[in-house]
Image 1 (cartoon, rainbow, N blue to C red):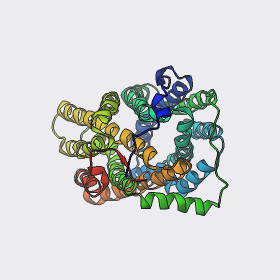
Image 2: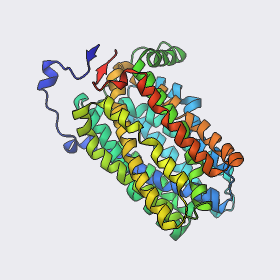
Image 3: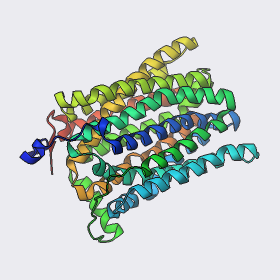
Image 4: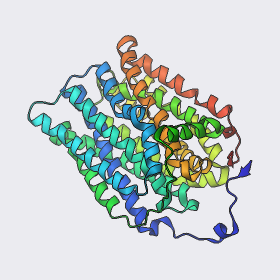
Length: 424
């Protein structure tokens, strides 16, 4: 076992420029911020379009949720192998943004012509999900080109800050746009955000220095990524945690909007406000998590975060009575959940960097995404089917109980130790 925080004297002597003064990091962060804001608009507008305007059933809502993550199961592993093969990642990232922009723009166009259906929304979700799979696979090793090794935890926290800011402003913007121009046209904001992201990424000037090894073959490369994940107990535990969180998160997300609309009688604007509170929590988490990890270690912060995940699901399942009361408690739990997500995601990304050889980062990250994001497909489908058969509120309780089992993965792995050590 070796301490991952140990560095050579040369590395210790090197003092990188603060991230806030690095132009290319600011461009990359800005690209993330605008796409996350657009995604927050669509995260409310697309389900509202399906549930309110097109009369989608719980099963259809589950399929819609699943369609976004299905590409992780279909091409997630291949995307990771591709990422490690590429000498330049940015052109692929730009192309993904452009394709996603066109796909999102078809929704209002189809609504105008009277062609919009739930299957159309599902198809668009699948295309955008495919672009997201490829983008994330190449973006992970690309970050190592833009950001110095000593600043990666801070950079990952910055990305979580962008997500949190988007979660604060995006739902409110979404609610306003839905009221003013209807849900299908609000989705144009997401299309525009993809275009702006492509422009910002295109302006990054840091030379891409990734030198891929001669490819031994797609499936051999995929097996190397799987093997690295399987042999490393820390990566295995992180993957198990992510699968558990996202499966029950997929169950919850498939039903949340329709539950809030039909059971709690919350209007779309208040649903957006609750989501905004999640973003406020994420913003607070992004501000404090780097300090917490420096003081307590990435492992301990990540482990503590898992204890908070069931709270939001349980509070939502308990919600009843006057709208103001539901709004108050659900907003508070959403804020806590936002902090917990950031407190889990930032250490997780740093630990993956720490535990994975540089030449395998694309494959290992894509393998993790294949399993962690891909399970959302099964979670969304399960949520829709269970919602039809058991009712909406009981399924939320199932989600709360299920996500709590994340602590088992922590307890059976080296992550239970507070020190940040590498098992490589």
